[in-house]
View 1 (cartoon, helix red, strand yellow):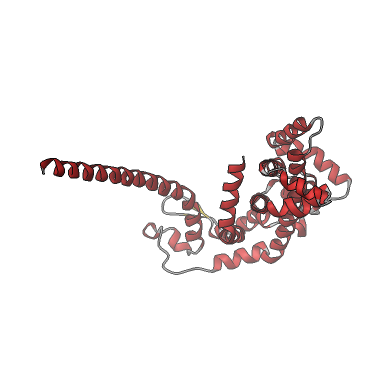
View 2 (view 1 turned 90 degrees about the vertical axis):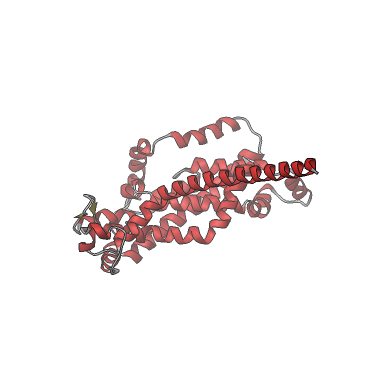
Length: 304
């Protein structure tokens, strides 16, 4: 009887230790995740909270995280200063045009590197990857001179056109993602299609691209975010009525006063409202496609 009890006791102790270890591990993991999420969420919360405040709330130390009355005047000034709808239209033209160019050109280049065997393939792929290491300002002067001679300065073409040739912003990364995805697929897809009489162009367009929709979504979101937040290229080529949302923030911010808070921070509420309006479409897109985006990132990582 004593031996049975001791055996039962040992089993219970082992079970308690097992679950205690799991619980402790989960506590550590979730604590670290909460801390990391706070690092990323704090700037957004800070920006959103202060963009709705009045001047007297900024200088009041007791109301750092409390909004007694929501102030929409900052957003009204930001909306008018940004000329939001017109600037949003310009931003969408640049972002969607460049993203479409990247998807078409980089998917074709990635498919070629993954499936076709030709001399210099590895060297050309290495050159495409090395383009990620070249700083954008290094190529600014020759590109600016070239586009200015072609009469494209002040238009969207200097930003959109390179994307259709696999260049543009982060083009090498998109080529790499497509190449790794197509390389992970079995050759039997193409062999079966060739037996049915399909050409390589038709195989690429009708078979490979629909299969690659997860990678396409990843490239779509990455390209949209990078072009949406890019300030360097648009500020170089665009002017006047072609300005994008991010380019107008400094001018709007300089037209409104900056207030020193009770803790010494210099805060421009209208500038914070501008930033909120600029990133709002990206946040909406992410929340709509977050499941597909995470699946695409996971699948691309497994393929790599």
